[in-house]
Amino acid sequence: MLEYQAPRQDLEFLLFDVFKVQDVWADMPQFADLSDDLVRAVLEEGGKLAGQVMAPLNQSGDQQGCQWQDGEVRTPQGFKEAFTELAGGGWLGLSGNPDYEGQGMPKLLGCLLEEMFWAANSSLYLYGTLTVGAAICIEAHASEAQKALYLPRLYSGEWTGAMALTEAHAGSDLGIMRCRAEPADDGSYAITGTKIFITSGEHDMADNIVHLVLARLADAPAGSRGISLFIVPKFIPDESGNPGTRNSFASGSIEHKMGINASATSVMNYDGAVGFLLGEENQGLAAMFTMMNYERLSVGLQGLGAGELAYQQAASYAAERLQGRSATGPQNPEGPADALLVHGDVRRMLLTVRALTEAGRAFSMFVGMQLDLAKYKADPAAQALSELLTPVAKAFLTDRGFECAVLAQQVFGGHGFVREWGVEQIVRDARIAQIYEGTNGIQAMDLINRKVLRDAGSTLHALVSNIRSEAVPPGLREGLIAALDRLEAVTAELVSRSRQDADLPGSAATDYLDLVGYTLYAWLWARMAETAPQDQFGDAKRRCAEFYFARILPRTLALEQTVLAHSSSVMAMDESAF
Ligand SMILES: Cc1cc2nc3c(=O)[nH]c(=O)nc-3n(C[C@H](O)[C@H](O)[C@H](O)COP(=O)(O)OP(=O)(O)OC[C@H]3O[C@@H](n4cnc5c(N)ncnc54)[C@H](O)[C@@H]3O)c2cc1C
Image (cartoon, rainbow, N blue to C red; front, top):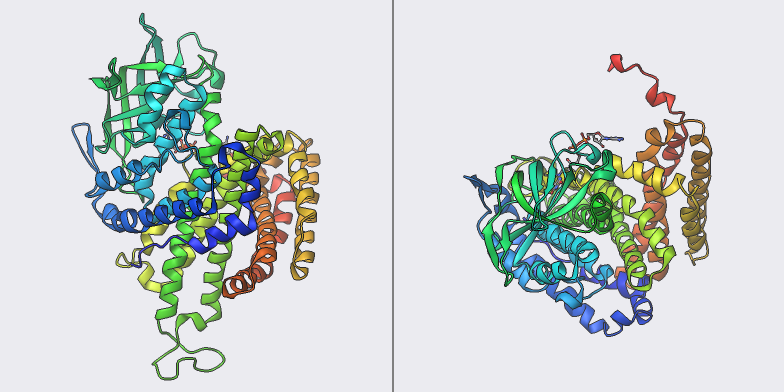
């Protein structure tokens, strides 16, 4: 299997040419010192870590998986050392708060690093991303003492994080969870219950594991307004902040999964475990949601990373593998056959993967930039945009990432189905990103109900209006304007019809999210084509943009029809007929 290489040229093109980050950061005092050279050095070092330390363990980690014995979990060979390098290099604290030993870098830059880490080894990076997620939540809601205790240890990876939300009967619907919390005399709480599917809930790579657990107090209101959030460390920190008494919870087993086999997914049993309230009582779900925008973007980047890794493998294979002859006559007359790259259908697959992946990268950066503007400039428009686009980033990037992984596998023919080449692993590993951190169906419902219908499409309209004022290459202008018009017309119709047809939003949600995604990718391709340099790299960008507009954007024509089809086409069949 070809080792993963970070796509540095594309990253730098997007940063410096497409998004002109120097101008954005010049206006943000926190980032005023971020020179181009420093940014390039960060990308170079991150790329080395991804390519030389994480990627070589991807296949062996998948084959060995994790081992569970008596409540303890052993991760695959080499994982602990690689995680120590990932954490020790400060990568988990890259966008963390400098007051607590984070690096204070923009999320926009963090997105690029995350994509590399996901692409190189998604199982290994999961131990990191859960740690980053826990830190974000603690930073936003914890007391000063809690921040001082936990944040430096999480940023350094000395301790790792886990998020314990899901219960066997409560997945998408967390409001019906049962895990209990009882106040103790010393101000702590006793946490009792069972959580399932807890990523990194137990493992052997850190001195302590900090669980953030959602639980319900006895007198709490029913439903999602009665859920509180607790810090439940595996070892209760002593007075000097070192891991002390072993807390009373343990991993009951680990799951045997389709993919991400080197990531330990535990059933966690909390048996009167000592927990410390994080934020306010009964505000737990709201507290979790403040970090959701970050975590959901991160999982979107997992999908993007899968697409990039898949592209690299498939493009290299298609250049080497000789099968058949070109339709226009032999291109490799000395050889027994031409390379796969001469065939239109193979090019269709590769260009689809590339066009979706490169636009996805630009899209993820745009969302990351909105998170920075919202956080560091308190920009309300950026806050609204980040909320609008987060479900799109999570679902569209992971759905397209999986599509890309399957297309790349197809380029390999039968060799994509067998283990040797490692491409089937990309498919297996990419699949979970569509499911966890809120299924993609739930993301689509979030987009349509909370982000579009609630403000009658005005945040989306503001974005589209800004896009309309951008310069676009003449060859792409007509297609982009038609796509923007289509999106606005469908949105207006959806807003209006949903008032009479309560089932319409749910029936149309996923198709609508796709319509938004494909339309925004068209905008980003137009912007990339407009900014691309006059060289080989720039020519390839322009060719990809043309491919996107000719071959992928027309998907929106079908989506326009399916989104606006009456909900009865989905809802009319009687339940007993299923
Ligand atoms: C490998 C792995 C790792 C995970 N890691 C974690 C973790 O670290 N911490 C954690 O807390 N959880 C974790 N999860 C749990 C994961 O987040 C849930 O599985 C996911 O949120 C879906 O919940 P569920 O499995 O109960 O499915 P359900 O909620 O039962 O959903 C089943 C289907 O119904 C759809 N659906 C449900 N409700 C609605 C609705 N209202 N409207 C429309 N459609 C709906 C869903 O989209 C889905 O397609 C993990 C899961 C896996 C498999």
